[in-house]
Length: 530
Image (cartoon, rainbow, N blue to C red):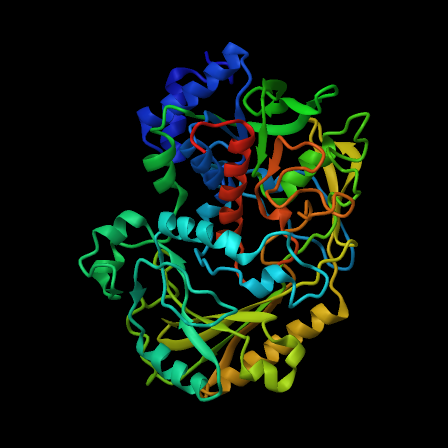
């Protein structure tokens, strides 16, 4: 029997369920057990196995540091009970906290869209007073690194607010994209290919190369959205310096009161339901915005009664998410979307265009809304109908009133129960209404036959901002590298460090920031690889 309650046979079965190579995955988990048995402190513990955790581990391993990854989940979605864990929601709208406790986190279900944030996003030009402590030029090299790792495909657009990346190739435009794009161009609107992450290996072996990828059935069989299994199997699990702990839900970070450094992480062993402890030298929090914040709020000490490193009082505040909405219309059959399968959007294939709203349509009607929303554009056939859809996201203004706080109560297993509040300002609602109005206008260009669907949601599951970075320790939790101002050997690597949440998908940015943060931590630890 292993320390986490698994037999060796169960361990091999578990790695198969995770989707990792059996023997290699078992070795990584076995190495995690040895850290527990040795009682030596882990040089770096990375909590969370999603986008931020993967980027952090790869960067630390590249610098020659041994890394242990701690994941609360066990295997695939069939074993995911995270959303049943208690939390409270206050405010006019119930807050939908979606979690994905399994290896890979929400990367196992994302739509793989990878735009970069722009210089204007970091400089706070869109939302006055919300300037990041890091410039676009500092992040650009890390964007490039992550784009290469994910095998991002797309086309250059030459738009300052939608920076071009380094793309392995671009899909050839489909007929409806050409036609819709021309009608939009006449109004000063930019339609470009979506920037999607594809399997790097599939890109290498594609028959069409990396110049222009054809959309044909044979190629579609070779390509898929990037999934974390590729990174785990190819880069993490085989590395002898990487160890994996599954079914370990981090509960508290224990701090040495003399050195003010982390000395252990207390976690719940989900196999036994018991609390255990792992000695650590440093910690990278990559568990996702709200999970990371909940852990810090629960890690109270005599010096930090309101949460670890929370002398600024900002921990848990400034919660953001993308309000979103969409419209789907039926268009004449003359619009060719025959390349896509009947029956709906094929989730397994990168698809769709991107319409950035820093455009004439927004400027003409409301200049203050320029760059405040964007659309993903999809054409597909279902039930014999040809459909065209615009799916938009809006910038949300950061406010201290939107927050996660602890109620002071625990679940039966000892997990703190938080209360989450998220509300929208009049300006937020105005931006959303204008976005929907612009979507209506744009779809009229294609003379739709009728409207099929219209939706509006308060959440896109892009949680951010509750452990914000900044130069002033009095108004922020982390420095420009995600290190807690008060406890520099605790780094926060997920979207909780965001100062604002632009109208773009956040995954590429949080991975770039996580890699940069990990390199800085390696410098502090004196890694020979730096």
